[in-house]
Amino acid sequence: MQRKLINGLLLAILAGAWLALAPASAETYKWTDAEGKVHYSDQPPPANAKRESTINPRKPSKPPAAEKGATAAKPKTYMEQEAAFKKRQVETAEREAAEKKKADEEATRKRNCEQAQAELKMLQAGGRLTRAGSQGEREYLSDAQVAQETERTKKTVESWCK
Image 1 (cartoon, rainbow, N blue to C red):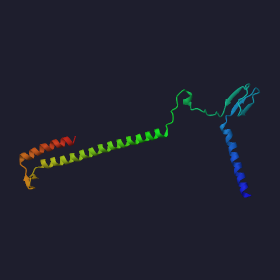
Image 2: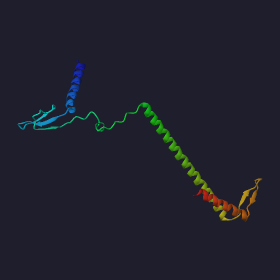
Image 3: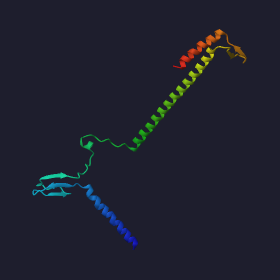
Image 4: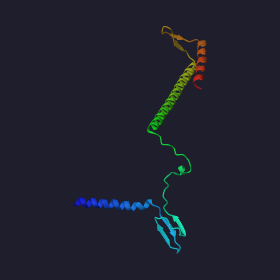
């Protein structure tokens, strides 16, 4: 018994909602007749109406661009959408790889510049400089060798620190 009551009540609510929403989609016309009375209706006004207007015009079935003669873009198929998506993914990956490579090159250039500048400062500071010989022994550099190394290091700094 109670279930029938609930089903009937639910049906009544749905029917009421449908009836309430039905006029919202229709056009509403307003016109003044020959006697000066204002009328509202969902039907177009008669031919003898003095003034008429549409209150709730229906929305056109075609988009405005299609009415002006413009051709609407054909929707893409699934395969076309998938191909476009994969193309964007590849382009993004290539762009990110190029950016990473450029950042790595910049970091390497900066590190080499800093090392060359540190070596140049050490050479210009003076004092006794050494390097490892062929047998691993310590060899002291002469003044001519220090000058030669200083010039070579200056060129290295110029090339890395542009």
